Length: 324
Image 1 (cartoon, rainbow, N blue to C red):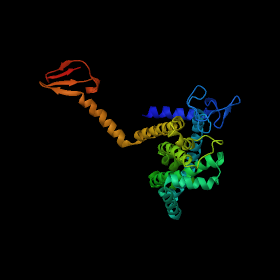
Image 2 (image 1 turned 180 degrees about the vertical axis):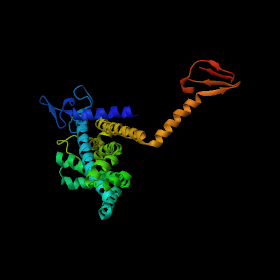
Image 3 (image 1 turned 135 degrees about the horizontal axis):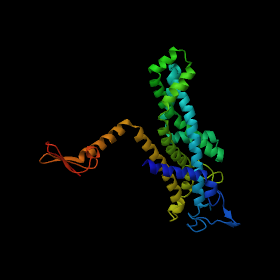
Image 4 (image 1 turned 60 degrees about the vertical axis):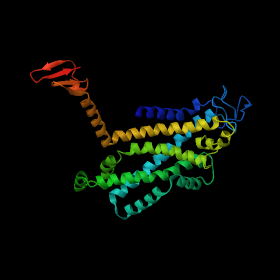
């Protein structure tokens, strides 16, 4: 599962990076060699995935949409990590009234429906504009606010736990400054679970961005390509039998989210000690299952039984016989 997720995620990221070289046309291009693209054209040699109702090439829009999604993911997660980790570290380490205020604020944000909050913030940040700034970056910053409480709560809980450890008390006794303790000792040990949260948030960011675009709070097609916007414009096409305008943007969303989610779930399995214990127990049970006692005192072992012992023979007078 991890390998499949890494492959799909790598394809998504490489597509986003190499979009200018992979896309046959620009995301807002309507003509080539002086010839205007036809609207709602089925897949053909000129347009491998067909064209939209506006005359845009579907394949180009899907490829360029990967770059928009990657941009939003990077900006949203990077900003939310910086703010959330910093606030969680300060809140958990110093405590007091600042800790209580930050906990209440972050809990209020966390309890608010994420998509509705992202819509409200996108409207406020963009100021009604749908260009690259008003669309992509406004969506990224609105998603940032949604994600900050998650990092805050994780880092704060870890900081509260770590600051009670003996090595932190020892550092305080010898006069180590708070800034050094927080940066060198607490932060290093409190951020071990961040990779898992990042992968889960990345898939959620794609869905939130697509939701904003689908509901009409996304980006203009002349400013950037966005999968949710293309899905919104293709709703009327489906009832007319024009399937390609909705299928491929939707498939891109599903594959991108699926790949990142598989990576996140695999990391969760690797990091969970209970799952590791169950896996080890299952392996041990499998080895025991391959070893059996037959009537007459004979012990039969498969390749994994008895440490991988193979062959056939009788051991002394005990009547123990090992068979392949």
